[in-house]
Length: 100
Image 1: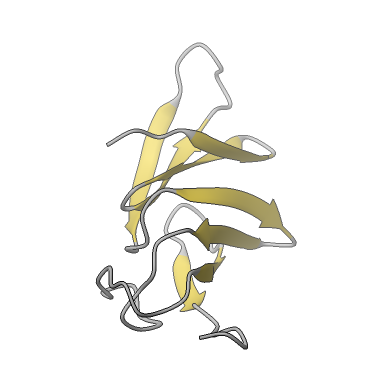
Image 2 (image 1 turned 60 degrees about the vertical axis):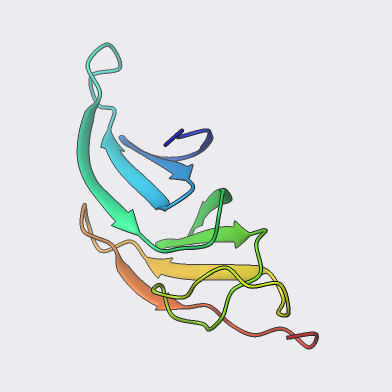
């Protein structure tokens, strides 16, 4: 698993990966500490943080809006929304767009 997409908010970093994202405490830049891993399927996702929410773009088609969804070929990629409630985020939604 590669944490390749990063978003920053204060002393926290959010690293997107193929299974969701990882929350890191970067208050000591030389010694980052992993606080939690948030698992939500959707292939490699780009992460963005805004107003206490983390948005993760999902570039692989999913079977449902749940984090437990599986990759499929006959659906639409999209976004997931996660409330940043401290180091243990809370899943909000994977909204459907007009195409899916």
